[in-house]
Length: 212
Image (tube, rainbow, N blue to C red; front, side, top):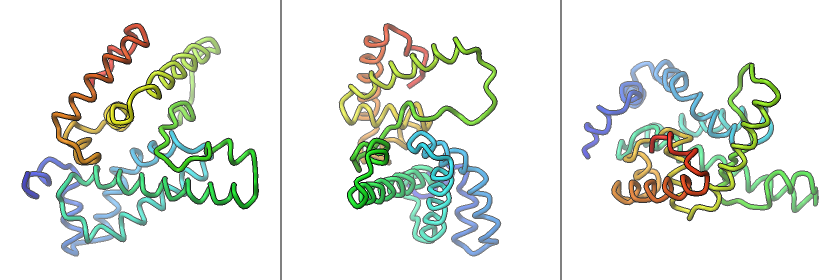
């Protein structure tokens, strides 16, 4: 796909173009932040326990985006590129946490990060921010369903798990997932199909309503 074709499909394309051409750079970047901030914050909210850390990582991601935006070459959608930076930021944070564990020998911090710098899906760590109107029973049932989903997804092969995470939790298109993971679109669709069938089986059909 040509750069023009990618840009025409991306709702952030005009703001990116304006920034790179020097037309109201600050205003253009503010538009990108306003559009994409909730998605980036949600990415970290599923992976870290502290609200403060979540906000710091979100801000760090947008700082990296600002510094690197002139070099963005439109070979993928801006959102795909943005999530790559978010993932890099997250993995760097994990490495910092691991170093702190090794230096302090803190069991509490070690438990938080699981002693790993690999991709951490963080399925059951946070719910969307907002006022809950559910009953205590609703909360228990929802927590149980979330834990079952976490176990089922965690049992998927790595590429199927990654594709499912990006599709369902980050709402990426098949093309964006392919760009993000460096796979062919057909391969992404196959991974999602196999993952969905496995999840349907392990969850007795409760996952069937999710469109992948």
